[in-house]
Image (cartoon, rainbow over all chains, first blue to last red; front, side):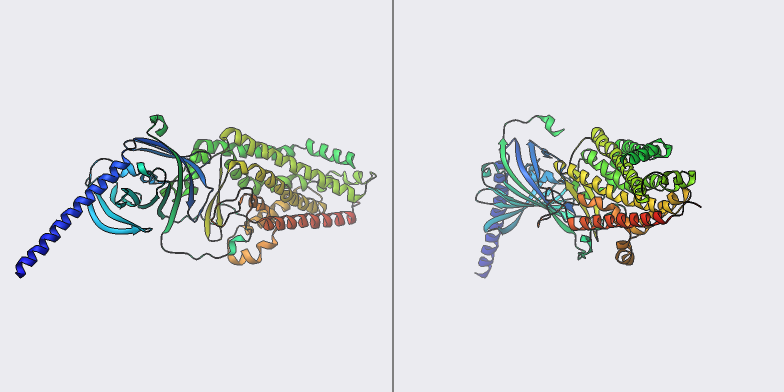
Length: 232
Length: 297
C-alpha cells in the first residue's frame, strides 16, 4: 500500500513537471506568436536618461524595426546618448532563430499581475547572449519584464507596460536598466570655473551604479513596410 | 577727449605688435579647427572614456561649431591676457621710452584724462580682439563644423559630469560669455596700464603683467584644498574663467537640464563684481601714481 502511494506521488510529480514544461513552451510560443505578428514598425517617443553623471535633456526619439532583426533608435533632433544593448528593447530580437532551450522557472508577480518565469538558454556557444529571463503574463501572452545577460555588454533589464498596442505585443512604456560604469575626468583637464557649487561632498558608493532609460512610445505605425536604407 | 582717443587708437593701429595678437589668435584657431576636422574623434574618445561602454554617441555630431568654440575659448582665454598685456603695458611706458610723454602733457588735457583715454584705447583693443575671436572661433567653426547640441565636460567637486545644452539655447550663452570675457580681459588691461605708469620702457611692464598673470593662473589651477580655500579667492585669475558659468546649465530636481537657465548666477555675478572692483582699484592707483609721476627726470 505504502509503495503504491509513493508511486502515485512520483507519477503525479512527473506528470505535473511534464505538463508545466509543456505549458511554458506553449506560453513562450504564444507570446512569440503575438510579437511576430509585427513584421515592421516605426514609433515615435520620448527618452529620459537617468545616469548620475549624464545631465541631458529628454530626447524625442524614433524607433524602427524590420523583421527579422533590423532595429534602429535615433534622436529626432540633436545629440542623443543611445544605450548600448538598446537592441533588446525590441523583443523580436530575443526570439530570432530557434536556437534556445526554454526552462520553466516558476511563478512571480509584477505589479499585482501573476506572471510565469521562463529562462531562455542559447544553444549556440558563440551567441553573445548568455541567458534571457522572461516574465510573461499568461493571460494576455505579454512579456512584462525581461533580463538579458550578455557576454560583451553586461546585464540589461527591461520592464514594459502595454496599453494601445498590446494586441501586437508592443509596449507603450519601457524602463531599460543597466549597470553604468563610473565616469571620472582628471582634475585640471577642463579648467573649470569653481562656482562654489562643488563644495558639497558626495557619498561614494562602491557598488556599480544603476543607469536607467525610460522610453514612452506613441504613434506606432505597424506593418506598413520600411525601407532598408533607414537601417544603414 | 574724443580726438585724444582717436589719436591713441591711431597709434595702436600703427604699431606692428598690435597685429601680432590678431595673427596669433588666427593661427591658433585655424590649427585647432584643422586638428579637430582631421581627428576630433580622438579627443572625444578621451573625454567620453568609459561612457562609451554603456552608450553610443554620434561623435561627428558632437564635434560641432559650438563645441569647437568652447574648446578654443578654453585654451585661448588663458593666452589672450598676454596679448592684451602687449598693448596695455606699453601705454605710458612706451611714451616715456620714446620721450613723447612730456609732449603729451603739454596738451590741454589733465593727466587723469590722458590715462583714462589710454585705458579706453586698450579696452577698445580688447573688444576688437574678442570680436575677432568670436568671428573665428564661433562663426567660422559653425560654418566648418555645423551647429548641433553642445556637450560640456565638467569636473564638479568629486564628480565628473557631462552636460548637454540644446542648440537653440547656446548662442545667448556665448554672447554673455564674450561679455564676461571683455570685463575679465579689461582687468589685465588695467593691470598693464598700472605697471606701465612706473616704467620708463615697454618691456618691463609687459613682462611683469605677463608674469603676474601666468603665476596667478598656475596657482589658480593647483588643485590642493588649502590653496582652493585660502589663496584662490584672492587671485583675480580665479575669476577669469567665470565665463564658463554661463555654460553650466541649471538642472531640475530630476537632474534634467532646464533650458535658458544657469546653475549659479550669483557666483558669476559676484565674480563680475570682483573683476570690476579690480579694474577700479588698478585704474585708481594708476591715475593717482600718474598724477604724481615726475616726468622731468
